View: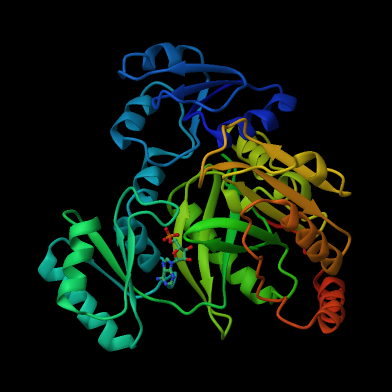
Length: 403
Ligand code: AMP
């Protein structure tokens, strides 16, 4: 099968690396002029004149980023199957549509208001801050990613609100109540063409300045009921969108355990990179199995796994590889401040060993922030005991499946 991928970045490259053993071959369509995927064939299309050529080379189309013109994807759907569909893409690239869908499907979210002028922004900020006695987060409705196009307002001071409108406004914005979460988590699921669904164990995600730095899975202290709750949310989304492929739902977990949905991504996701070395079937392979109409693979975790993003500078990768069970995934990109250059997946037999490995890797990575996990707040001695207990009772939570 020849798979066409819209976009030619690292996610596309990792899809291809997972698809070759399945006998698939890949053609990328790049409209940026700077593709980084260095595998298969890349069709550069800076003037939107080469779509027909691209389509002639593929049997099925998928995408690796969601900031694509929906009309273009609808056009492609007239010629070749596209998974996930343009409808899923449209909802996921607009925070307003996404939140409305969450609400309709009874998936709880932070309270929010949509605004499109300085006046309505001022009103929404005042109302939400008064009601919750918490700051608000203001975000652009479209095009924001990795924390870009966002601002936090602690007061409804008119000058500060005007400055935010000046900086990111002039377009539709969403104002959300600020959530004091215990941790950020994500659930990744895959749905096949026959409606079969599988869920990966949830991951805890540590962001700094809006950029993902660490993902750890399975969560050692996660109540099975919370995993099931997250599965029911993502299952409702998959069904509603008649979705095919991998879908990611990012959530905030509060102190009482409850989950609030933040956003979703219609694609393989950075918080699922751990599955390459920590799960029976990676998110990349399962996405391609779904796209190709093949049976899905097991989503069960094999080891406690931590993914560390390599951002800006790589450091001494030879030294990193001296550690047992470190898997290095480099994207072939030039070093540049803030740029995702690759990631490491560390696996271990138990959680204390994993966290020790993480500390050793972090010491070798330039600019890596101190990792914080919600379950690792105890002194080192206590932590070992507690974590061993967590590993034993919740160990290697199996991914689950739904027909
Ligand atoms: P997003 O682009 O919506 O994923 O936001 C980027 C990051 O900002 C998230 O990963 C959170 O760390 C933080 N954030 C976003 N929305 C909120 C919120 N309503 N309350 C608290 N933190 C938030």
